[in-house]
Amino acid sequence: MSVGGLGKILGWGVVFVPLSVLLLVRAGGLDGGTPLAVPVVLFPYAAVLSVLVLVLVLAVRALRSRPVIVVAALLAAAHVALLVPRFVPDRQHIPSGAAELRVVTLNTHVGKADAEAVVRLVRSERIDVLAVQELPSAGVTALAKAGLGKVLPYRELHPENDSSLYSRLPLTHGGPLKADTAWPQTTARVTVGGRTVRLVAVHTYYPLGDAARWGRDMTALTEVARADGSDTVFLGDFNASLDHARMRTLLTSGGLTDSHAELGHGWARTWPVGKSPIPPLVQLDHVLHGSGLAALSVTERTVPGTDHRAVVARLALR
Image (cartoon, rainbow, N blue to C red; front, side, top):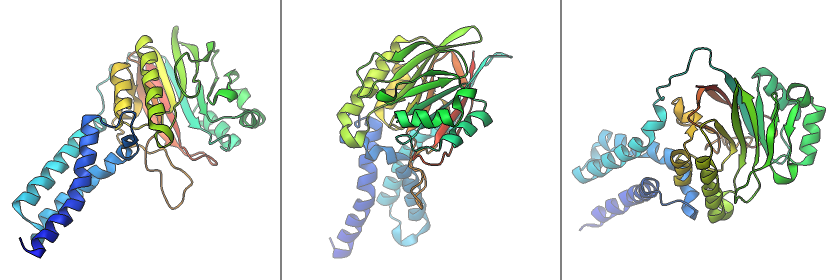
């Protein structure tokens, strides 16, 4: 083999090997509770890269060879196949006049989120339930001074436990969730259209800090979701994307649906914010719901002061 031929093989190896490894991890669900949970969050970018590589190979004559084209095509097809489902909206049957629940989740970045901006968001979106994470006592005070209590008078506050709930509707059965998570998750119930909906304000540990601990958090949430009924909403900072195996298990085994994927919004990005010139890269924040509800709309909103975007969802009971 010539030096030039060896150089080409090594060059393509630099491109194809990382793409192949990440594809294997994603397809095989090998990231669960392991450090591989960190790079797998970049899978959508790998999919885009695989398509660009295929286009480049087909467009540049000097790069064309049957083996290279075959490998590039297979990698691109496999990557795209794993992403396509989240871009296809679900078929929904929502009864006419169905009761609605408007929710928003926001990681306040240890209370640094602009409290007045949070209240404006709640007012403009006519929010029924606000779930907050990383909200210390000082953040609770700031939101109170900004007038949050005037629009969301009911509260299940646990600043010592990280997450809290605010609501326009009366909250019942509130308190820390009984689950083996690093930080207690706050839960409560609201009555909407004559039905009781279970709310869980989620904030899991983060894979970069301790992937095994994060994996146990996700497993614990799955067990809770599996035991709950269909009228359930889990919303918050999961520190997970749809490419994490533990998140997919939470959805399938827990009987939950991701609002973004349900509506075909397959590549939302909520973190990091405020790291100019870097835009938000990945989605860590989600609104998940049981089969008794359906998402009518979902969007992201930027709130000054925090490194997460808020996720706003309008849900219908069916």
